[in-house]
Length: 173
Image (cartoon, rainbow, N blue to C red; front, side, top):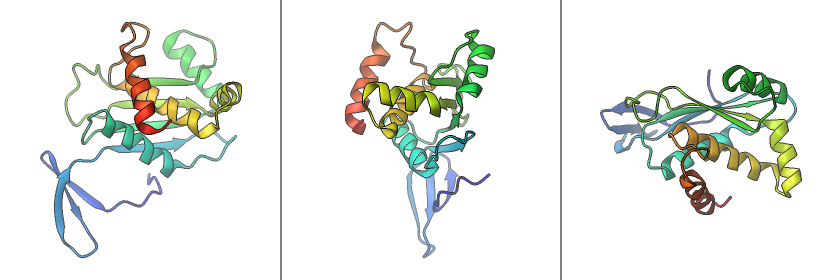
């Protein structure tokens, strides 16, 4: 499935990425991160390209290179079902992260995993906190990606929270 976002043709060669421009000239650069954004809800229009670029920027700020992840926008009903099924909590939440492997044991080239965001809950939290919807979504993407990288605010004595606040400032959110 195409994300709809236009990208130059790229080919991974080892740790380097070869990008082919329209003139046929190739240049090597560090492998870029790739994020697929899926919209599985109908309540709000989602700018998938914007959130793809943002998530890729977050990954770059985290020092990741050549990594992949998926961000999925869903309804409250869908996230409640996932939360019940995978965490045993029968309640709506704002964001869930599903790492494909333990971050400490992950082999390069494997995707990080999926970040699932409830658009309805994000809109509600934005209104409650006096934020705009886009700021709330940016915070949830950042939070979810940190979890995919192995951070856990429930067990790490504030390490994830400190990093998240520092990254929010750097990313302008």
